[in-house]
Image 1 (spheres, rainbow, N blue to C red):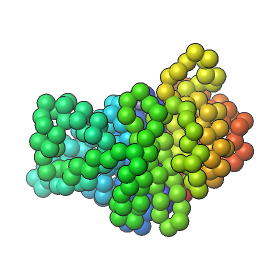
Image 2 (image 1 turned 60 degrees about the horizontal axis):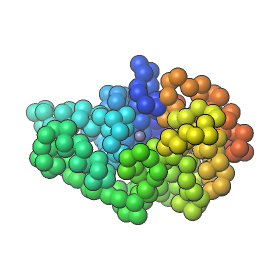
Image 3 (image 1 turned 90 degrees about the horizontal axis):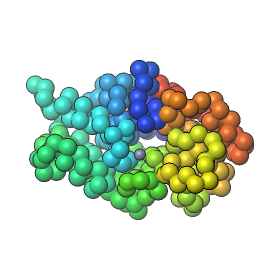
Image 4 (image 1 turned 120 degrees about the vertical axis):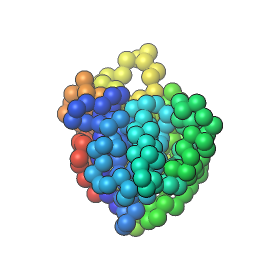
Length: 246
Ligand SMILES: [Zn+2]
């Protein structure tokens, strides 16, 4: 299994780094995981080679390029149809509301809707995926991806929590680290500082940690150092264009 980072910029994209978006691949299967702004146009493969789409939650920095894909796949001479779309009911309802249409009418034949919630599992080609409820300001799903005995966990957006059981046996933890150090004592914002991500990685004993969703105004190298101060296994940045072997 491998992850290709399409974009990892936290909160908003920059000219060199799209919003949240990854290609998770194993064998011949490719899943586009989060459709942040700029990710469709920066896709490292032809968009038609994407087998399924997953959206972690409804914040615009994670989902607005679904509309781009919808237009690209729908309004052309030979449209794509029935692209599997995995997301919570909350995401599907809000995306449909933006188009002022009922849910299935909003996406026509282009997407095959798969509403999912925490505890659900799915098999998408060569990839097995489990959905986990995270702790964010809106309903948000983490995802545990498994293939050929290797395991990746992508947090999506989340605040702190005890994920040690959920993260058991994870080889690579792709974790958000949207906040700068240190967390203010009265700051209950539901994102992670890099040291909190490191703590979660350490408590669960994951193989390595990849930090993502760092906003452009935060020093990413300092974020890596903060995570390394609590987690003594490899820590990397999800740089746009990077290929992460799981
Ligand atoms: Zn969010």
